[in-house]
Image (tube, rainbow over all chains, first blue to last red; front, side, top):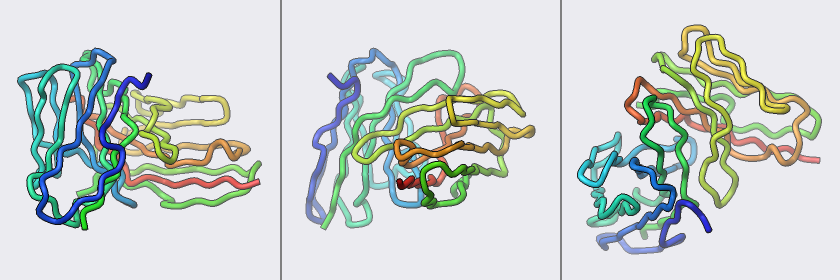
Length: 115
Length: 111
């Protein structure tokens, strides 16, 4: 079984709809991240969480919100989806460690299309 | 603002050729990681370099961290079709556990 799972894998929605993307992990990691990927832009950080009570904005958090329901679950919401939020979304986890470059483990991604 | 620029953006080569991918920044990073991503999957870590000037080898892949810790390169010797994928560099600063990803290099190796 995959260590980091994302649901759904694909979603097509309409402008203005509320969408939730879910991420679960069995790695026992404290730290979880949400990224979006666009061609030519690499991965950009949306939100991250270092434990259940910790939520931090990344570089592109506008239009998104997150919830860390448990150590193993981190969900991303688009309150009112717009077409430029069409992208590939990845969840990732990492161990706590003492250095900032701990390996990040990624889920398989969710392809979101907003019409 | 994209802090890590990769070049080239796309690279299509034949099996057996050598290639180098560059990752450049005006900022200093405490360490630099390289990930490879295959279609339909998330990125997977290849290597982490932490010391200025450090060179690490992973079979046919050679990674180097610049002396000033602002840039890195990935050299592949005798590329194979299995090397096809998107290569991403990612920089870390201190103990923040946040990575800044590069713009990506998409490599295609054909027979």
